[in-house]
Image (cartoon, rainbow, N blue to C red; front, side):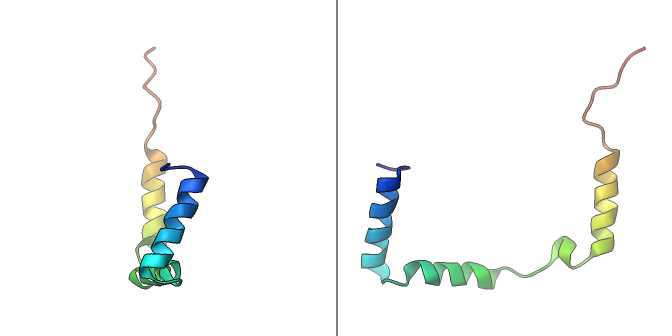
Length: 65
């Protein structure tokens, strides 16, 4: 029953019985600790430059006259 609501509930029950009732809290905390605010959040000027470059690239084909 993979991909169904019933299957998800069964999987959650199994995970909690195998790894403890705080299983999802633990894996959520691990994910939160791995993230570091970087990239565009750290450098607004770089984000502005990258956005300008992306804005100049046209996805439409060139019209032949």
